[in-house]
Length: 405
Image 1 (tube, one colour):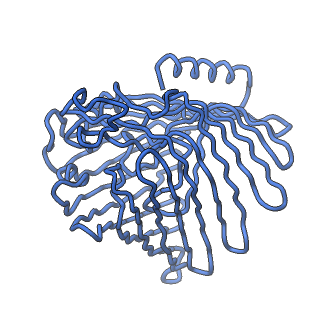
Image 2: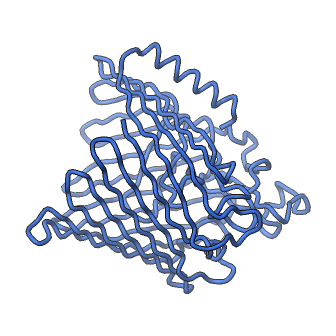
Image 3: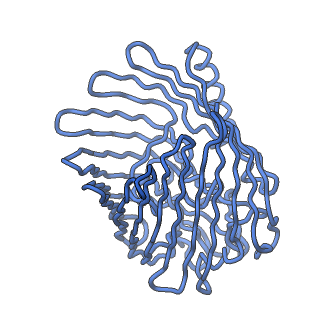
């Protein structure tokens, strides 16, 4: 989001906050350190980094059920200037009636069911410099209309402004050898970031199954990182490209997708899938799997879940997706204690190349306000020339201590 647009949104948020009057103020402020096990692979990278981040949230609701939400976010990073950034995660007014509502402003919407890969979550752009797991999202300007008659829920979205994906800068870790050039982004749409995107989703619940189907038309949230051999020749002259940089190219797409989650006893089945038509080849992608939970292990309160998922993608145009034929194994530990302790470990194996990676995430609350999060990623084996191979020296551990208020 451009600085002037961001400043205008912030001013609107503060003004609306003042007009709304008394409400609920919550949020968190955190200090974070990331330590890497090896020296950097690419020129210009700093070895480790520390940062401070904050995300307050103001929420006000009126007697008629309408509400106002304002969630700014900011981070100050010691190493990567791009990771020092701010965003409006949410700034919206919601008007509600008995079985429908309208939301206008900047919002966040999540679609999906699986644990390791989120294929169908397309409304919000990924804030990739926050974490490589892709779960942090930028706020999306939107007009949302939702209605819930007896036969399900229909959600309709008008998305008037596109948010570009964030990437690490030259000093940042967890990047490719070529830095992504954010000053020369290419759009297939002549309207660029002001292309009008639309989405429609139907969701319902039958027995133990929750499912949704949707159609999206607009700017893809996944950029192709163009190199001289991949650049769209009708949009840019390959000779204008910098050999040291990657140019994000955002194509126009039509995407039809679904997500399903079915619970039966200790079993939880999950599926996400879509078919996409765009500038390059049409393709199909899917991920799904099952989780089995052992409740009350040893007669106590601890639950242990074991899960396996598989991801498939038949695209061969050089996109960012690295999950084309991959198997995931995981274990979730939940003691169900007052501190909200949670542990999730995952192992990913590429079934075509000898690539694999391991991730561990642990979180626990201390007292009423403090939460400690520790997560670590290890790129165990990588194949020469792959995207993951560019991260082969970026094994890291991240420790975050957050104060919630």
